[in-house]
Structures are given as C-alpha cells and as structure tokens.
Image 1: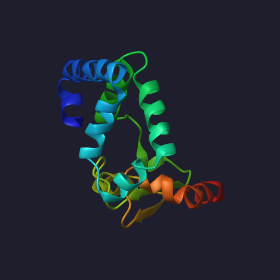
Image 2 (image 1 turned 45 degrees about the vertical axis):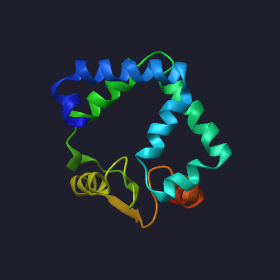
Image 3 (image 1 turned 90 degrees about the horizontal axis):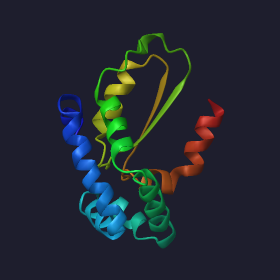
Length: 146
C-alpha cells in the first residue's frame, strides 16, 4: 500500500472510500478481512469481546467521514517526511511485535536505524494488536520513564 500511496494516491483514496462504505454497511466484513491477515497472537486477542468492540469503534471512527483521512495519512507515511532524523534529540521508544503481519518488523528496524536515540523493543510471539493488548503496562512504563 505504501508504494501505491506514493505513486497513485488517487487509487488509495478510491480503495479506502470503498472500505469506508463497507465498514458503514457491515463492520463485520472488515473484521473478517483483518482476521484473515493477522497471525495467531492477534487472532487470540481479537477474539476477546472487549477488544473486538474497541477495534470496531476504532475502525468506525477512522472511517466515519469516509476514506479520505486514512488515505491522506497513508500517503503522508509513504512519502519522504522532510525531517532530518539525525537531528532528533529526544529519546524514542519503538515497540514492535515480531509476529506482526500488518506492519513488518523490518519497517521498525529501518526506522530505528535512521534515528539517533532509539530504544527498540521487538517482542517475540506478539503481533500488531496483541503487543499492546498484552504489554500495555510495560510499554507505557517505558514511555513515561523516557
């Protein structure tokens, strides 16, 4: 999606407009798609009723005004940010699940190599959603302590 967002943002807007319509009509359809694209740890967490309801609210809010906002975010992420990463002086914590099938752990490693003051936390056995669900307190403690 990043390559597409950089080269053909109009196509990403079109695709996410369809996703927004689908979410509005049938929120369970997007959830089913998500379940097919995540690993075992994420499937376990997403099966928990409270977490599932929170994800439904989050997705509903993300697409409440259509797909334009998410498409814009994706396009911004895909293009050069114009920020000289080497000049960032604040400490940065990067947390990533080693079993994340939504955002590759390699992307976190690439970002970490570009930043000067990074502490990386690559958590084995955790995915995109399960990382925060299972390690929220530890994650927040590390951020507050930074």
